[in-house]
Length: 340
Ligand code: NAD
Ligand code: TDX
Image 1 (tube, rainbow, N blue to C red):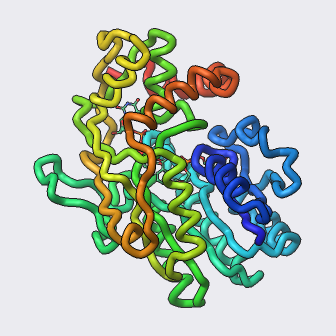
Image 2 (image 1 turned 90 degrees about the vertical axis):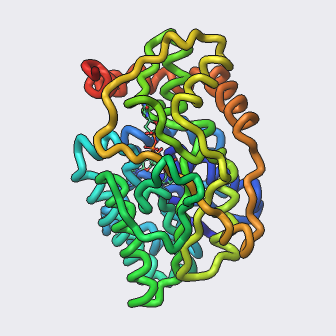
């Protein structure tokens, strides 16, 4: 079995590659990644010499490169993680989100059609459903919740989902889609809430909480997401969407306080800053379908997962120090420098 994993030098894609190489000792994994600011080859260092692994630097929008690789490798399965993934960046600069997240998805699916790929899996997000009100804790996103996006990022992901389902209906391409809630864990890029707060706290820097910090996210340890995708590509029904989430809703402010406590840092580091434009209030996944059809359940509780994650950042300064001392510094200054 040969699997092409796009975006595998990023956070979730790299964790998926590690999981697959270990869980399936006879599979070959080819990672196709453009190595944008979010992709790091150092993340894949431990598998670079594995004879069952190959890395190819390419853009999923580059038809020639994509078709060339598919022709060479004749993959059985393609799992698409490649995306521009940060909501704040999409608010500043939507164009690249449309290009990679929509056109890149179309290019990959065209190659799948051309080379008879047996399964194309699209890694989507719960953000395609928009948000839920804080005063209705009884409401959850199911697979039939209407798409109702808020940001350029989530709109580009929803557009891609529609295209994936169109390729299924129109061309019979064997597709599946997973819509997961917020992930956390090792190799999470420092621009995102949890790693940003861990790294700032370690440095005794201000912890910038948007608005009042009351927004709720449904957190899932990254390994549980990877296991869900492994199940879907092997046993999930073609043409179907599966929501992935672990009923682990937390307010942002509570997460930041937990990080302070775990690191022995004072809550006085917390600084409330100007809210994100169009900020989604609450995400909450109903994972009944993937549980009842595929038997998936999350295995890592938030209290264990956050401890493991903090320990990983403490033990792996060599991974994140070069990131936060490079181009990221300019990004941080632009986004947080004058944010009142
Ligand atoms: P990430 O930003 O950490 O990684 C994205 C990877 O894609 C990087 O390695 C980058 O170099 C690569 N990439 C970007 N543009 C590319 C292009 N044009 N061609 C080839 N490679 C390209 O993202 P992540 O957090 O690992 O998210 C992975 C996927 O999962 C995304 O599709 C995202 O929408 C989805 N998702 C993420 C979360 C989350 O909490 N992080 C939750 C649900 C869904
Ligand atoms: O500095 C910050 N301060 C803050 O209060 C940052 C970076 C974030 N936040 C808030 C905004 C959100 O309410 O924390 C929450 C989480 O923010 P992000 O880490 O940016 O994640 P989110 O916007 O929820 O999107 C994530 O989950 C769904 C991923 O980045 C997406 O790729 C995924 O689809």
